[in-house]
Amino acid sequence: MTIRDEHIFEATKDLYSWALRRVPDDTKAALSRARETETNETARKTLNMMLHSAMAAESADRYVCSDAGVPVYVVRIGTKADWNANIKSAIRAGFEHLVETIDPPLLKHVTNPLTLERGYHGKDMPIITYDLIEDADYIEIVCSPKALGSGRWAAMELFTFPTLETIETYILDVAIKAGSQHCPPTVMGVGIGGTFDYCAKMAKEGTLREIGQPHPEPMVAAMEKRLYDAVNQLGYGPMGTGGDTTVLGVHINYAAGHGFTPVAVEFNCWINRRSIARIHSDGRIERLE
Image 1 (cartoon, rainbow, N blue to C red):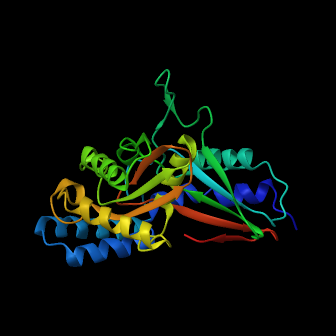
Image 2 (image 1 turned 90 degrees about the vertical axis):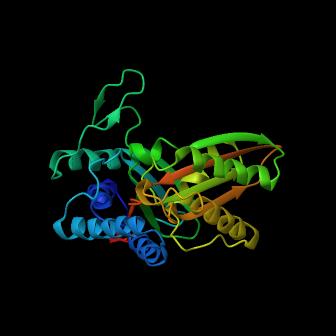
């Protein structure tokens, strides 16, 4: 059997809806751990409210947040997958089906940047990026809706032969500037090196990493821990209420590059929205998250 348009459509028509109604398990676990260690009473109450909101949305099959954001998909194609599909068109058809059938209905968040006209559709929407998974015989699709709060505070700067201290100072400065306006506690994805576009991609991928999974290289893992501690010491706390919990994880990816070194920082709000479907070459669709 071959992966075809109808399989892509079937896998993606509900992915966006799932991401809006359920906080991922790793995120709920991280919020629960933070609640146990948080020293600020107001912050503990806020974390508790977040966990109750997550459970209420899941049990009632309703959105965790009214800002549904815009549809963003990452398609990871296995190099040994058997497929013959117009992936972009099939995902777009899946999203159009969702817009027509989802309950409650979505707000019109898709915005033309030149005219500010708002709707459900637009140029290059949904936003889709692609990657390859070597030796895999499936296609994996991740939906990670991007809303205003977390999306607004992403940032990038280009340096020339920066020191590690310069890089870490910049990342912390981005967190300081964001304050509590991105609905903390957040997950911070960081990209270092490569090129302008690839650096931003690495930062985005960092936000999709499971919380509690450190970088495999000890030097980078130590950097993640330093930044995690430093951001939490800023004291913004959950939703700006103060406290020890401003970030749930700092996830760094890096790549070799030229003398110019881009550094990108991306945030996911406390809901950390993502849903994943895997389409196997026999047409079987597996929901992973």
